Amino acid sequence: MKSPVMTASGTFGYGLEYSQLIDVKKFGAIVTKTITLEPRIGNPQPRIVEVTGGMLNSIGLENPGAKVFIEEKLPKLKGYGVPIIANISGSREAEFVKLADLLKDIGLSGLELNISCPNVGYAGLFAQDADTTYKLVRKVRKVTSLPLIVKLTPNVTDITLIARAAEDGGANAISLINTLIGMSIDIQTKRPKLANVVGGLSGPAVKPVALRMVYEVSKKVRIPVIGMGGIMTSDDAIEFLLAGASAVAIGTANFVNPNTCCEIIEGIKRYMKNNKFSNILDIVGRINE
Image (tube, rainbow, N blue to C red; front, side, top):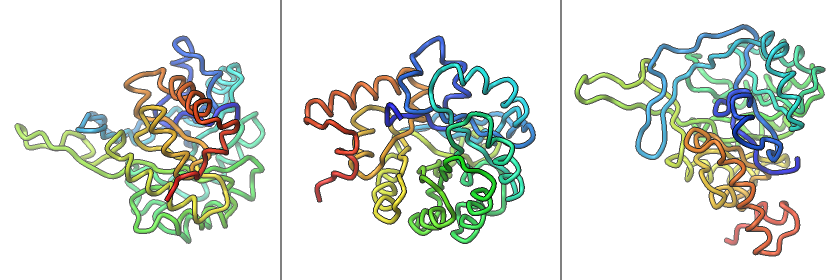
């Protein structure tokens, strides 16, 4: 990648909405909004609420499905000259496998397996169990040679066990963290603010948790870690690199300032110049303890 900065899935659409506003060619990669095999209408409204230090969402993986992505979204995305990573999800292993097989020869640079969305109502997320994570990644690995990134949930007791299971299954990288499960209540109506009652918390409030998990996981796996969770500035991004992330993904900040990724890219360049780093890898994991 030309830059260690990419977009986080679900916060940048399919990139098409922003192309007239910012120079997406500077990005390391665009990670698309989640794609499922069939279209999904998502959860009932309201499904986004601002809270102190971030936001709650319960979108529920609304998307037009794989056919529309392949025929309408991807051709335009390819015109940007930026690596495109498709974030994919499914309710069963078979859906992940079928979707990965469908997307393997259409010019993508990689797949991010979303096995950790908290808003889809599955009894247990794949990423909340090491064995199910291993089995799913292994099955997907068998049908595609594309680089596989596995996105993990912080809603577990020990995320390092899940990360190692993903690596053993054939993952090429780990991305973390997905959102923390939270809720907000309107005290006048005494009703939850989200129609889904609970949703995923993102934004600056989750950054210390995300940073800690990147630090822990990067010490336990041999594959690269992509850090995300509350990154709003280049200083935030550099913290993740120092903690052990090889790249970062920007999420909630895109809703506040669509130019955040570009500003963070320039900020990292200034930091490297000021500290006489010639390669981004000179920063990765350089925390002094």
